[in-house]
Image (cartoon, rainbow, N blue to C red; front, side):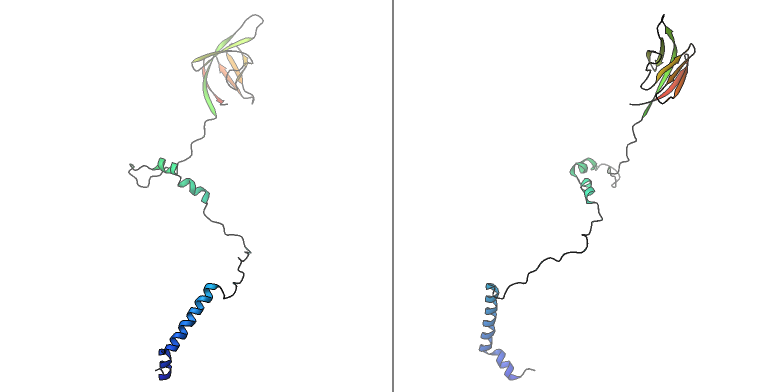
Amino acid sequence: MMRPGFRETLRSRQFALLVHLALWSLLIVAVLGMSGTMPPFSEAESFSNAPQSPVPASRLAQLFSPADLSKSLNTNTLNPFYTRHFIPPQPPAPTTRKFELTYQGFYQSEGGMKQTMIRIGDSFVVTPVGGRVLSNLFAADATMQTLLLTNPAAGTNLLTLNAKKEVEVPIR
């Protein structure tokens, strides 16, 4: 219960006028900036490194690029979880090639070098002894029954007369 004198003070015109003037004076002081100056605020210096993101954001741009989305968007598939984003890598290109060689003999003119005759697949090659037969195969020696082929790594292949032999040669 309130005392009757206090209740009369709260209901009096003088008290209402005093509260009204006090509020107006606070508003004027706030608007005119007479409340003083603000203290100088500055950012505190950090003693630790900035946190790093655990997500590799540079690769996210590749996932959502418009060019990739238009390629991989296929609505006619039966599986709703179909994606073309995870495609297995292509197998490496072959480094060697196989050729089928057939030694067909040699000929030699008076005072000249031996010329070997070799069938490579469907083509026919005539090359002197010491000359190139394929990319890294050279005719080392020719006899009536055999032809000796060599490469720069000192590997040899022996071809017999009119017998097909498959030879593997590196691709340049």
